[in-house]
Length: 195
Image (cartoon, rainbow, N blue to C red; front, side, top):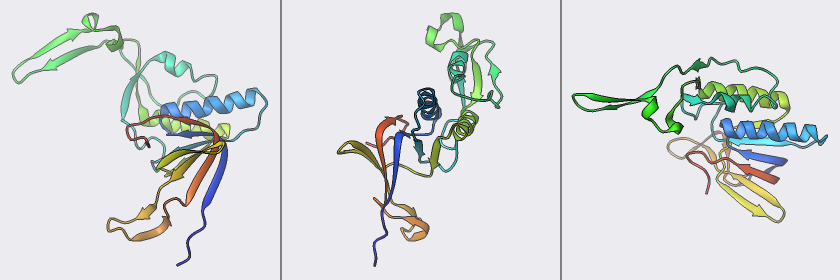
C-alpha cells in the first residue's frame, strides 16, 4: 500500500488552543505585526470542530479583561453580558446551609461589578475577529506532539478519521501525516495539553 504524502504548513506565529486566551493572543500578534508594517502569518490550531465547543458554558469575567481586547478587535461584542449585582458563597449541608456575604470573602472571590457571559459566545466572537484580522484558525486539528526541529517549532497532528472499531472512515489522516512548522510558537495550556 502506498504511504500518503506528508502535509506541511509553514507559519510565522503558531498558537495552539482556540480558547479565549489563544484567540486573544493571535489577535494581539496579528495587530502587532500590522502596527510594525510586517506581513506575517498567524495560525491557531484547535482540537474542537468549531469555535467554543470545548469550553465551559459560562464564566464571570472582569470588565477590564474585555476592555483589554479593544485595541485588537474591530467590533463590539455581540453576546449578552449580565452584570453581577451581588455575590456570596453558600455552603450546602444535608439539612441546612450557611451563607457568607461578599464582604467576608477574599478579594479574588468578589465579583460585584463584573459580568457573566457565555464562554462559547466569547470564543465565537473572537473567532470572527480573527477571521477579519487574517488569522488562520484550523479547527479539528489536535496536536499530539510539539518538538523543536533545527530553528523551527514543529506541531504534529495525530492520526484522525477512525471509527469506534478502528476502521478508517472517509477523511482519514495518518499519524504524522501533517506537520505545522513555525519559527515562533505560543502555547496556551488547556485541560488536556500536549506533553
